[in-house]
Image 1 (tube, rainbow over the protein chains, first blue to last red):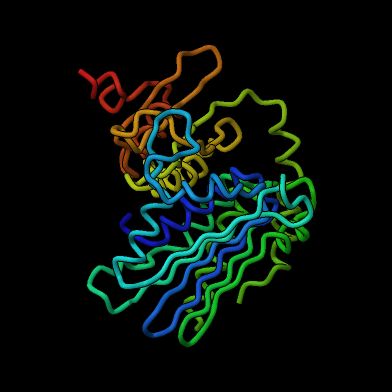
Image 2 (cartoon, helix red, strand yellow):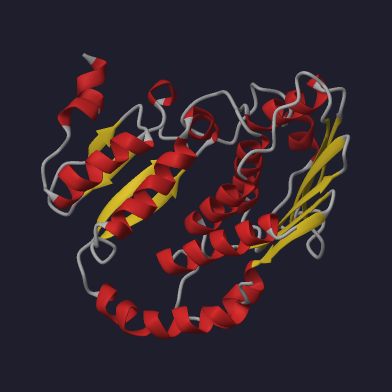
Length: 183
Length: 123
């Protein structure tokens, strides 16, 4: 991937596919490191599946036999001397408390570090494609932070206006961009 | 500084529009957004359709949606256009610039941009 924000989009799509009512995207950034966590309360995975997801020859897709989303993300983190972890609780085994958490830390001063890129565009794309799902976004960086909770937006808009409406998506994009420029 | 209260104005503006939209026959633009599509550049293509459809005043008749892997990863970014009573059109190797032309000529003008379709690439 050209930007880590594209990995975030890709990984979060898995959460939506796991029917997660809420997907949390956290980015914690210091001068030297960047940590991305995608945490959802979707259907989760069993131990057997969890062991296989970092293998490129395991995939949930039905159109071909290769799944590169999670292996890519893991490789990109480890290439910088960073770390990757994934944990999951399946709905079958943990009916009251299930979901998946993926976390990767990148070392920013490593030559193989891929820039974060346009996270605002990742968030608007996710929301446009999945207006029924909720997303909690929190990016803490040196000197500031950016925050978005679609549950708050949904509450303001009421039940009749989908979050995928052009005006809403545009507003969300501007709302986030402003938080980056005002810091 | 933007505040959540501004959403109230959007909500009020949308009231009439939502009712209007329910009955209209829709064209559908479907962008492949699996790992293959995203890595190949589907995000800017999707955004170009979302923005362009609105800019051309087509948001009442065209819905822009996302899907997973369509199965032809070597041709990503892939965009499929569905119109009632017509064959599906598959555009391949899309870019934001190509999306603009598809919006103007195909979605607005009714004429398929043949040179961007899979038939033109697979020859």
